[in-house]
View 1 (cartoon, rainbow, N blue to C red):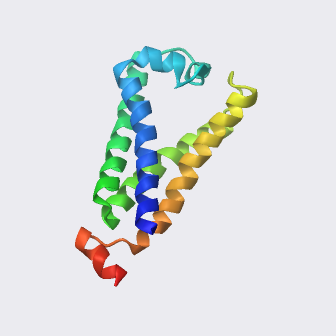
View 2: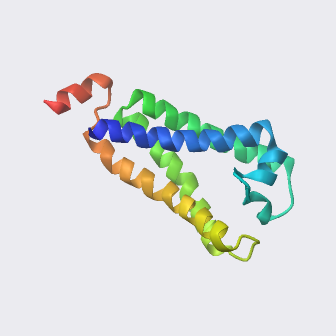
Length: 147
């Protein structure tokens, strides 16, 4: 059961990163104007559009999504821990920035939804990281640990 929850958590993180990354790489201006979607506009509240910056941010999200997706497929301790630590290396400074730069245009529900999403992007990898201690270093190791 622990392995299934860990894999599910990794898949959720991977899909969220891939969604953001693919959108920003394929259509940087559309991503800038419309992220996170569904009528909300969080990114354009933080300054003027910069094609290079939007594409690079997208590539970063894409890389984190690919690494986290790989960890979900392999489900070994080294792969999962590496992906989750990398995810946190991005997510923690991202959350800190948004907590300390609240003077921008996001207000009300969008402000709180944005901060909640960023907090989840820190809390979930921490929980998943704790769940990796039972994983083996290779697929066969997991079977030995369960005995």
